[in-house]
Image 1 (cartoon, rainbow, N blue to C red):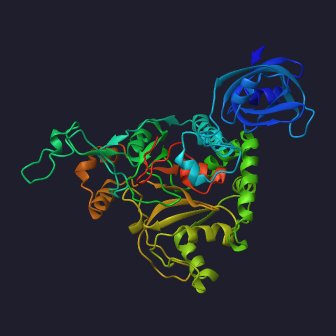
Image 2: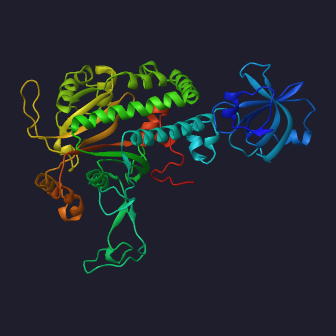
Image 3: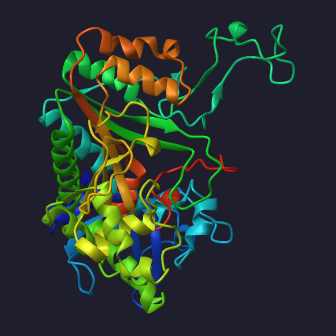
Amino acid sequence: MSYFPIQQLLKAAPVGATITVKGWVRTKRESKNAVFIALNDGSTINNIQAVAETGQLAEETLKLITTGACLAITGQLVESQGAGQAVELKISDVTIYGTADPEKYPLQPKRHSLEFLREIAHLRPRTNTFSAVLRIRHALAFAIHKYFNDNGFYYLNTPIITASDAEGAGEMFRVTTLDAIKPPLNEDGKVDYSLDFFGRETNLTVSGQLEGELGAMALGKIYTFGPTFRAENSNTTRHLAEFWMIEPEMAFFELEDNMNLAEDFVKTVIRYALQHCADDLAFLDNRLKEEEKTKKKEEQSELGLLEKLQFVISNEFVRLTYTEAIDILVNSKPAKKGQFQYEVKWGVDLQSEHERYLVEKHFKKPVILTNYPREIKAFYMKQDDAPATNSRGDVFGPTVRAMDVLFPGIGEIIGGSQREDDLDKLVARMQEVGIEPEALWWYLDTRRFGSAPHAGFGLGFERLVLFVTGMGNIRDVIPFPRAPKSAEF
C-alpha cells in the first residue's frame, strides 16, 4: 500500500492496486446505494473520486466528511462506472485528519466572487481557480530560471534595502529603526538619518537594475528575480505595492540584441506553460469563455486564453519606432473619431489603449516599440545620435534606445533599453533630472573603468502570470497581495 499524489495517480492509473490518497474534500454526494467523495490534494486541477457502499462508513464518520475536511482514504483503484473520470477509488478505510464545520467553512460547492475570495486569501488556494493560478505561477518561475541557466546567465541577488531610487520616481517605502513618534532631528529640523541603523536614509527597492548592471559588467550576463516595492497609491487592476521582477542585464548587447532576447525569452516561458500546465490552462480557458458570455458583445475579447497564448508564440513580433507608432495612431479611426480617452501626439507616454490598438487592431501581432522620446524615459537609457524624424521629414525631439514589448489584452509587458555607457552623457542627464552624481558614484564607476555597450530589460512577474492565466486583476495572481490599505495575512 503506497501514498500517491493524485496527479501521479491519475497519470499512472495502477488499476487493481491498493493505494492511499490524502487531500481535502471538494464535494460529498450520497445516493441510495453509495457515497461519493471528491478529493483533491492540490497537485492537479482534477479530483479523485472515492466510493463507499451505503452503510460501509460509520454514521459518525460520514457526518465529519464535509467540504473542506482533510482525509486519508485507502482503497483499491478500479475503473470508474460513471462518467467524468476513468478511474475511482473503492474505499476500504478513511482517516479524518481535520474537520471543517460546514456552518463556518467559507468555501462551499458554489461559485464565489473573486472579491470575496480576496478577503479569504489564506483559503482561496483550495479553489480550482486559484490552485490552477498558483501551479502556473510555479511553472513560469521554474521556466524563467531554466531559460537563463540554459542560456549562460548567472543569477544575481541584488539588495532589497537600498539607498538609491533606480526610477527616480520617489515612490518608495522607507526602512528605518528610528523612533516613529520622536525621531532625532538635525540642526535644520530634519530627521537625522545619520543616527539610523544604516547611517543614512534607506528604502525598499523598486528595481535591482542598477546593481544588475554592475554584475553584467563583470560576469557578462546576469539576471535578477526578486521582490520589488512601490509606494504608489494606486488601486487599479494592474498595480501592486509588492511584486516580483525579472531583470536580465547583458554586457556587449545593443538594442537589437535586447529585443531578440526579450522575444525569445517570453515565447519560451509561455511555451513551457502550455506544455506543462495543459489541464490548468484548459480550465482557465473555459472559465474565461464563461466570463466573456456575460459581457456586452463590443467588450468581449476576440481571442480565448489558449488562442492568445498561441498568438504570442506563433507570431514574429513587429518592431517599429515610437515615432512610427505615433503616425499610425494619429491616423487611426479611433483617433479621428475621438474614441481614444487619451490624446495621441509625439512626446506623450502611450497609454494601454494605444498600445492595445497597435497589437490587437492594426498589426494583429505582438509589437516592440523602440526609440522613445528622451523626456519620458529614465536617465540611464542610451541617447540616440539624432532626433526623431517621421516619414514626412518632420523633426521631433531627442530619443533614447528604449524598447517596450506590447501584448494583446495587457499592453506593455516588458520595458528595457540599451544603457548609456558614455560617462559624460550619463552625468549630464542625471543632472538634468535632478539626481546627484555623487549619490551614484559606484554606478558611474562602471563607466569610468572599462565601460562597454550593455543592455537589459524588466518584466513584472505578476504581469506575466496575469497574461498567461487570463485573470483580470493582478491581486489574483499573487498569493497574498499588498496594495493600498491592504496588508492582511
